[in-house]
Image 1: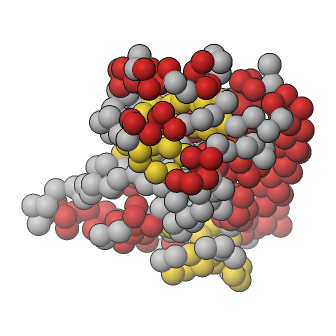
Image 2: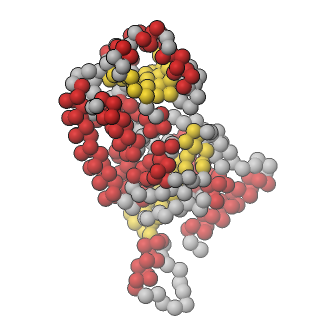
Length: 346
């Protein structure tokens, strides 16, 4: 009996046990937050015996389909298909799409989804991190599961996912180390060369964009704030994080003093009061808001504090979509570069 059949039977037994114990389907609440992994030895499972001996071509195809690789990750090690065909990648679909792989499910968080990925992956069955359905994951018949954060594997979820398919878990540093994460994903998918090419293309794009922006705005300061529907105001800094990685590190833009004071180093994002707005002496300001946060944004933009910001007075405030700014991955970072060029290099 091959590995996939064993996993499927194990998963069915696990789910049946949960039902019989009146626990229902394993639904677990999880919140969105924000290890270099190296493949180990390769091993072949071998082809199932048949009455007629297969040809050399058929044998090679069978061996390719059953070949596996060993990967170390934050939860231990897994033996996964060398070239997986059906992948669930929780909050990591960006990486799959960049490598030309269409996942079998798409991450959602309640009603929120990463709309910028629609042109690449279309409309897929959801896997909701706020209430994970392991039955839905099993029905998707994955041969590999990838989890973008360790908390997606907490409280028994890793064991439930692993009963369905080999499950790889990225570390907490995945957002800041997205380049390394891309190379790891390339290894997991058997697409190392494609991953290297994606990085090379991004590096070339950034070098050109950096020169263009330097010529366009010089040392003028640039910052980003995010307005949440719960009235929380967030100031983003660097040099890492969703914003800092591209705005300050990759493109070399200049942060205002308040960003260097409050949101730099280990704390690349801080929650600030509305009163701090008057200290935001910035030439160019990027604004994004959560689903339901537009009303909050309009309220703030009508205030006298808002009108005191130099960027507002100069008409240099730019609204950008939250879905690709508040996430990580090569497609998201390419779109962030595009947004910055469109706004600042007119």
